[in-house]
Structure formats: C-alpha cells, structure tokens
Length: 373
Image (tube, rainbow, N blue to C red):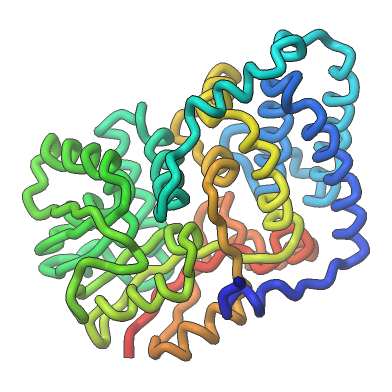
C-alpha cells in the first residue's frame, strides 16, 4: 500500500519531450534486459554511462557544455543502444552456462525473515564502504557535512555541547563528523551490526571518546521522547518500508524547538523514473560482480551514486508539496529548504533556472532543516 506521501507523489503527467525520451530509454532497457544473462559486463558499462549522464554534472568525466541536458541524454541513449545492438553477435562464456549467473545470485541471496529488506540494504551500503582509507573517510565526512549545511545557518560550532543523533548512520561518517565538531555526545543508530563494527573501530582509531553506536530500527528508535538537540538523517528513510513512520520517529526523539537535517529523494522527471526502471535489471547481476567491473574501468572507490540505487530493495520517492504538507501536519513549525552546493545536486541545477530542469530532474532532491514545534 502506498503511504500518504507517495499517493500525492504518484500523479505526474508526462510532457511530450519527456515521453519521447522515455521511448528511447525503454529501447535501451529492452536491449539491456536481453543482454544481462549473456553479457552482464556490457550491461554494467552501459548502465553506468547512462546513469552518470542523467545527473546535472559529472566531476570525474565532465560533460560537453555545448549540449543541453536533453541533447546529452539523447546522445548517450543512442550510443548505449548502438553498443548493445552491435555487441549482440559477440560470443559469451555465460551463453553456454545458463546457470552460471543464477548460481552466483543464489550464493549471495539474502535470508528470509521479517527484516530481509532492511538487512539487504545494510549489505548494499556496507560493501560500498569496505575499501575506504580511514583518514580520507573522516576528512571527507566533515567536508560533506559542512557542505550540506552551508546554506542552512548551522555552523560547526552549533554542535558544541549538544547531544546529537545520526539516524541511520551506516558506518558512522556523520556521527563522527558531529563528534569532531565537539558534540557532547554523538549517537549513531543503524540496523547494520557489521557497519557499526566498522564505525566503532574507526572512532577508536581516531580517539573519539564522545561517540556511541547502537543497533536499532529507524522505524522504532531505541530512545526516549525528546532526547536529542539535533538529528542528522541523510538518505535513510526513503529506504524503509514506512516513510511516514520514520519521520514520526524522528519527530518523537527530537527535543522541542530543536532542529534536524533531513534528506529524502524527490520524484518526477526522467531521472527518478529511470532509477525505478534500472533496478530490476541490475539486480539480476550480483553486486560484487558489478563493483568489480566498475573498479576495472577505473571508477573511484568513493563513487556510490550508481551501485546504491541499483541494489537497494526499497526506494521511496515523494514530491516537495506532499513532503512539506506532511512535515507541517505532524508538528514541524519551520521547514527551511536547503539548496545543494555540489554540481551533482539536482536541486542546485533546478535553482539555476535551467528550462529543462523539471523535465529531467522533476522535483529534484529534498534537503531540509526542520524545527520541531
């Protein structure tokens, strides 16, 4: 059943230009679906090329600035279609091993149970952090948090002496960033025990004595009402089964008149439509195989924007209007929209006034500094 937020988000009319792009996109998907068993390596490469090109910018492989977004996407789709069509006659070691890929998938299948989707999500993100250098991990974490809050009025000094929570902390990067900003106590909660072990180890090596990690469910937080002076919740609740309940829990454990940073996925446009459609195809390829191919083509280890979307079992989308209405309804008295500062941020591209922005990125991304009434 759709949540109340998603029911509002589900009603988007296609403009003719978007419909035309979707026709090309579906031709690409059909070819990828046909090739995924015989040539999974080629599907990974083609999907990577398309996925990176529907962002506003690429810091590693810069776009041609003379092309508009729709021109770029059209060219890339045509190229990927041509690649898959031309490779169809090539031989494949998988072709005569019909069970080869299925066997690898079975080996890495997740166990049944009440939390199978949540556990699968933890496995996806845990693998993405496995090989990062500790010093780079810490410095990039601080840099990213400061960049995200740059337009909010929240400064590094704002955390001093505060009891804070990193809700859905994963390997604890933002928990430790707040701890290094002199928080009195920085709590990190997550379902992934393995990720928390990594976080605990890194915090110990960094000498951070004001950090505490705890296994817990974002939909049933193990904290009393009104516990925290600040909550950081970055890209977590849209991967849960109940987005509204997650927001309600955030509201419950936050102190009155205190603030939280909340990041959720948007909806609409080719970008979000594509994310929904790529996942079922890519999930026929083991994540380990995909990461190995991306590593072999030289993709930096800290580039997660593709593999996370392709392999998470749950990804919720919502419009800005629906999200703001719900936040106000449950008692947040101030909703400060924060425009991203990085070139890859969808909302930053929308704010520049690009006439094709809504067509490609819909409602963009939702970054808010919210205050509990």
